[in-house]
Image (cartoon, rainbow, N blue to C red; front, top):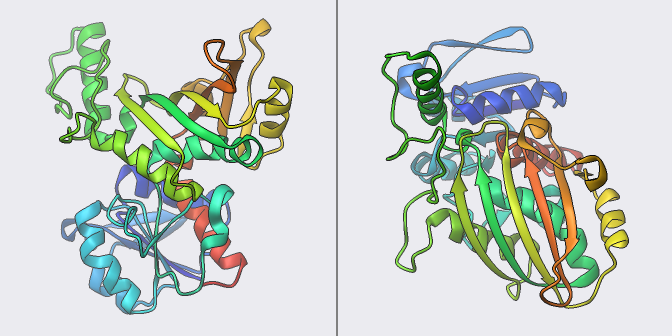
Length: 335
C-alpha cells in the first residue's frame, strides 16, 4: 500500500514513521512530504532511503492514505485536495476536529463510525485521546455525568523548540553553559509550571482546555457529558499525565472499575498503593498504551471516582492513534 506522511520531518511525523515500521503496517511505498525547503532531502524508513516530495507530487503519486501532521493551516489547504484525488486523509491537526461533517476517532472508542466515504478523518487532541480511552468502558457501565480534569503535559506536546528550551535551561542551571537556546514559552519551563496551553479564549479558558471539553463529547457520542479542564505545561518529556475526577449516574465498586479497565483494549492498570506503583511519564515513554492508576472513591460526593491517567503524547496521543485508524480502515476494507 502506498502511504504518504505529510510533515515527515517534524516531531510527530518522525514518530509516525517509527510507529508505521514497528507495527508492520503494509507500506509498499512510502511518500514522505515536508515543507518546500526540505524537498529533495532523504529520510530512511525500514532501512531504505526515500526522497521528500512536494504536496503536488504526493497527490500525483496517488497513495491510498495520507497521514498529516503539518499544522492546521496546511491541513485546511491540502487535505481537501488529497481527498478530491480519492486519497484518505488522517489529520493530526485541530483543523477538522469539530467540523460536523468529519469524524473524530479514537479506535478503542468509536472506530465503528468510519465508512468508505470518510476521506478526511480527524485525529483528536493528545490529552483528550488518553482520557477517553480510559473513560469509555466506565461510561458504558456507569454513565458519566461530569468530568473534572487537570493535565500535566510534556514539553514534547509543543514541539522541538520547547524541548530545546527545556534542555538549554537545564544545561545552563546544571553546567553553567552559556549557549543560546530558543524560547518556545514566554516563561522558563525548567523548574517551573506554566498553567497555559495554547491561547486564552473569551471565557477565560485556553483553547487546549476547550478542545478537551468539546472533543470528549464528540468522540464519546454524548453531548450530556459535562467536562471542565485545566491544562498545564510541566518540565517533563515522555508523556502527558492527567488527574481526572469522574461523576457517574450510577454507583460503582472499585474492584469492578479496576477489572473493567484491565479488560479494556489499550489500557494498562498500574494501581498498587502498598508498593507505590502508579503510572508516570517516564514509564509510558515510547509505549502505545494508556496507563491508569490512583483509583479511589471521591469521599466528598456520591458516585464519583478519582483516577490518574498517563500516556506518551507523541505515540498514543498522536502517531499511534493515527496509524491505528489506518489499520482499522485497511482491516475493514475501507481504503
